[in-house]
Picture 1: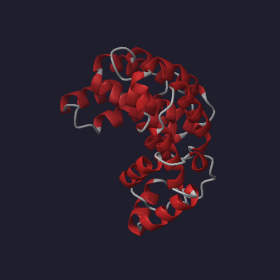
Picture 2 (picture 1 turned 90 degrees about the horizontal axis):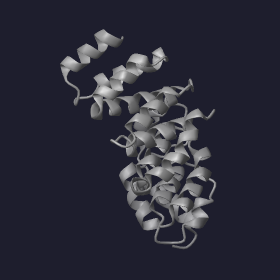
Picture 3 (picture 1 turned 90 degrees about the vertical axis):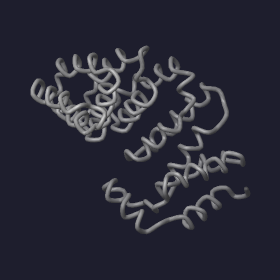
Picture 4 (picture 1 turned 135 degrees about the vertical axis):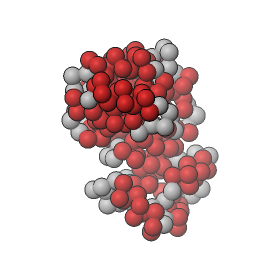
Length: 227
């Protein structure tokens, strides 16, 4: 694939959908560089792209949001050591400027499953970052790869340390709490009972109550006890 950057942009312009762009724009307010290319298409294209000379594209200045998404997806697909992968992730973090780029990036970092300890040490300091999407990145990584027997206590502790007031950081924390509750209701209820951030507590309970995996009785109990 010659001139990777040009090839990528031509493909994106070909695959854009006006109606999907309108839909995506309604979910990501304030972002005006959306083409409207569906994420499954982006992931499939990234799988093709990783077989060619992708390095020039990773250093490419992105005009469209989907270009940035593709860069993140490529990072997840590249075969390299965990340490090398984390260097790429650190370099990519400043490019995360909305929740959609953040969440699609996290979902593709499958190497985390076999490298929990290393990745945990990398994401923990981000919880206290001044940058909203650093915080959301850490939280989405936690809910995707760390809500298990080994890490649930540490995840809940880190959630209690979130102080960033940004909407998407708060919602990332609330989303993480809701997944923790589904898998570990007893431990998560204890967190909610002691959580000092009342806004986060309310958002978390709201997210829990949106889940079909939580019984009606549990939802009533949570609301009556904690709201």
